[in-house]
Image (cartoon, rainbow, N blue to C red):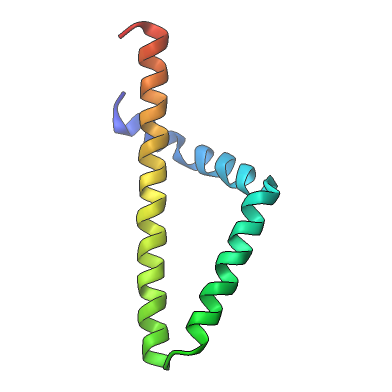
Length: 86
């Protein structure tokens, strides 16, 4: 499938994934624990170090979201290939 096809579905897919994550208690608890540790670590840093850490964290979260989208798309491609015997 063309990437343009997947781009048209990205908003819908991300909305569905967001709903799934938000409805998962396990996920919410994991995020809460992660945030608590991050804030604890961040509080001991200077303002400049906090900014650098925030920039690094944002970049890591973005790259993780890209990986998640790619994995989801590949899963869709694999499912279609299995269904159509390609």
